Image 1 (cartoon, rainbow, N blue to C red):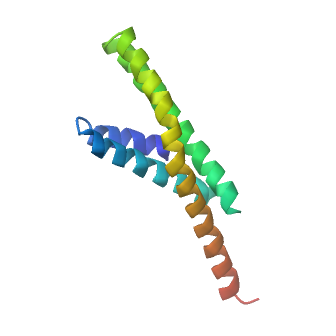
Image 2: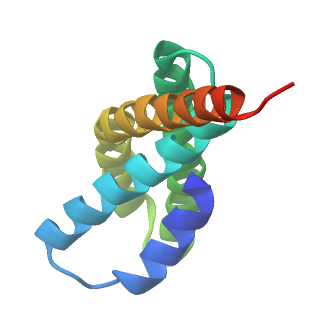
Length: 121
């Protein structure tokens, strides 16, 4: 999910200013973490962990793709600076991913509990 959101937002936000870029990084993290947390379910801590891992992993794949294309079209020096900045940004991607994962896990456990209470045997 994070990988797909990264591709889509890269096409939409190309050439925007920095504040919009930071906003879409947070949105990608929260939505990717929310999806991972909801799929995993269980405890909130488990959802937060999986949300953070999914967001960082998807962002890392996008960083590798972006570094390769930067190397091809711009050279070694721009690629190196982009990789260093991208690795620093992975920590910032993890924060909204953890938050989204915790919310997704909580939502799934709440929905499961509601469904179990609402059904009769």
